[in-house]
Amino acid sequence: MKNLLLLILLTQSIAFAETKKPAPVEGEEVDLTKITEKYWAEGKETELGVVQNRKYTTAKKLEIATVFSQISSDAFLKVYGVGGAVGYHFSPYTSVHFVAWKALVSASDALIKFKEQTHATVDTNYPRAYYGFDVKQNFLYGKASLFGKMIIYVDLFIMGGIGITQTESGGYLTPNLGLGQKIYLNERMSINLDYRVMRYNETILGKNTTNLGKAVGERGNTTDVVSLGLSFFLF
Image 1 (cartoon, rainbow, N blue to C red):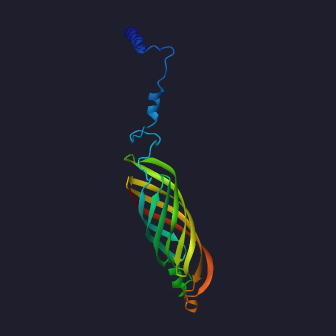
Image 2: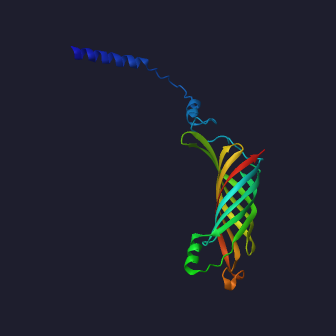
Image 3: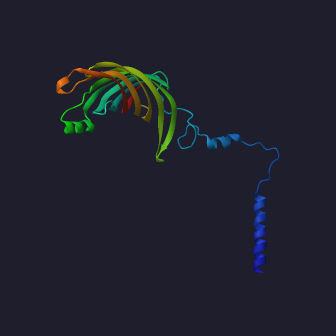
């Protein structure tokens, strides 16, 4: 009897639940707007979706930046660059910049070891400074969640330029190509990280007693530069 009673109650519950389901309306149209709004954000940071509008734009703005670089130009030299850049953004995608830095040079670990073992040194050509112009072209803009705590906005860009590398033995024309990104802190500031390859032909100077200060040969120098800096945008 108890099992029969449970069976009757279960049957009635199912029947009651089915009466609550709305009967389908023949020919009823589906509201695609509500479905679309669930999956496509309308500029709201709280929703997951595509970037429809740029939160931060650099168009028609002047940019002033600091530049701190690690420069790999010679295995026997440790080189860092300290300088800055001034640029103008013609649009959110294209900008031109004047870049300059002073080279801070010291002996690398390899050169220190060589001196200890041979009591001599190697012939080198110290870089002194670089100055030139870059053109940057943004090709990707996006946003991402940082540890689920905040939204960051990023521009990725390619760049190309030409300038002069000033060294102990003279100045040399230096074309360069690179890739970088801006991480926006707000509408007036960004963190910049970029990598560039620079190429120039140089004259090597003698550093030993027998050839001190004399030209001892020429070579093509391929320099890798990794730079980190902070930009300020002026309206």
